[in-house]
Length: 460
Ligand SMILES: Cc1ncc(COP(=O)(O)O)c(C=O)c1O
Image (cartoon, rainbow, N blue to C red; front, side):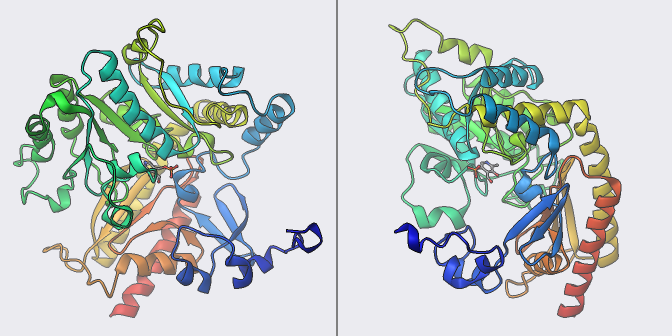
């Protein structure tokens, strides 16, 4: 386009006009979204302001990303300093000092002997990398037939073809089918609505033990990895019973299958420990993390694997080609400088402890609302990753009909009342920044209270 006609003076307010919105795809359905476009202009701490100046409490950290708060000066200063030093290093030839420093810092804070890191920009890239790592690892260790990945229905591991194939979310998959072969799905540990019609704890944790049967039915000699989110997000904050992940660990050990935790959301302090692996006391072979890792200032994600797995990639060049996986922006110095600053912020301010304390406060706020309204059937999650499931009938667990979509109505009222949270027809979730204060939690719960009350009035 000729420079004379470039519209580089479009004001923030003008960016809400359809003429301008026609030039961008967003994640939402365009036609619906453009009727009342949600466009953020500014943020500080746990507050957003949109282009009209309206204030929103950010109970979602954007989307579980803004871990140390908006406008965090420590991270901004670290980025500024790095910009003046080195903003890009040649990824085909090596790396840079900040990437090595961040990898070492992660090795310190990761559970067990997880200590080798592959950096990328987003969650999908590292879940994809974990799948490739598992396949290549088995090739290098004499089991070239192991390639299948077992993951769960209702899960979300990303939108690239491999990570999407591992995902189990019908609404995002069907439109892109056919997907990649080699992915097998099992039912998730949705205790509140057990897929096997059983009740905890008489169920003998069938959702976990069946994974062993699936490995055997598929032929263990063909299975490379089991990949799960320790707490599933997209199915409505699927928080497994305590036995679930230890059983998966044992089954994976028994069948020489790598256990991959997708901690894109649950990593970096969100569940009250640096990783949910610690919250559940289970060390996987690989952790994928992203989102909160850079606080959202720059794209950053990481795949972290056990030392013994990394060691197989250190053999002589005649025996292996190294880890055949990479992207242009991996280990970018700006991203890694932000990642170091975020980790320092979390460690020095003990934000994991704050996530536990404020998470407990948030949970009791949700419990108060459950008693008050009688439409919250279940409260699930850990630390500052908490959700609730809405039901029409507490005893029968009957859901509100599709035309009511209670959760969506509440989420939309919350937005109108100045609160950002994650919502779905039947559930709603909060994931505020790890720096959130007790007063801010109380304010978030108060706005949610008002929003649920308004919807109850409307449907009465
Ligand atoms: C659990 C989980 N895994 C993977 C991803 C994919 O991450 P990204 O959108 O950064 O590619 C997401 C994104 O929401 C996620 O929640």
